[in-house]
Length: 304
Image (cartoon, rainbow, N blue to C red; front, top):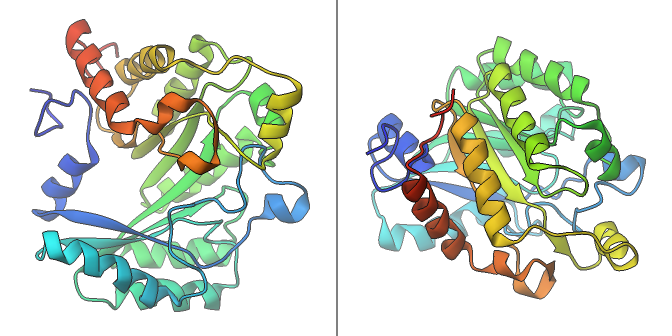
């Protein structure tokens, strides 16, 4: 059995990490403060982005505690003794005045059995005063900051209209790590014109930055996005399930085994999806990754 897993997974699972750290089941509750992002303010936003990142987060018309309690109520029926992490998922969750952020973060931290916060944001949207506050938060709760990167390659960052540079991202990770704040990074596989080797290079770069966790996504095309319009006018190859699995496994073999896998595939809504259809069968993808890793007899970090 792989060192960082309780089951047949051959990679460092989030479930393993939480149970080792907290000793019991932990759930992330997705929240929505109704924030936008600097990239949308400055232009059209990332090419793949729907009307709101974090499509499965709470309803922004509800206050943040109401959002949390509605999800918690459902989880308590099955796991009455669980801990919770407030996941500020939708939008860019440091892109607001500090008093607004404090009001929302602190409201969630005051709820019983909340053991931490996970804050999704961008490397170009954390001010000095917010960074200082995050450092203080990290001293009294379990905090993670999630940063979107998607790729280290300039050709891809330009294509997706990411709106910040690799240098900006790298500096932000360095600042967070200097302050002892755990960092989780999002990447996308299957960007047009990226090879398998390009995607592995992104993994190797993140190893060198000493990140704590990673979310691996498959590029999927959603309706009513700039990417959907581009795909209609300029059709490009979208990875097959088999190609995606092969690439993910190759990436995992080069990924430091201390890095926790927070996500290894996506799960878009069927009514929003243009392509690829196979992504709708999330658990089939997960199971096939497990089977293929066993068949190849590989584990996370085995090629380091």
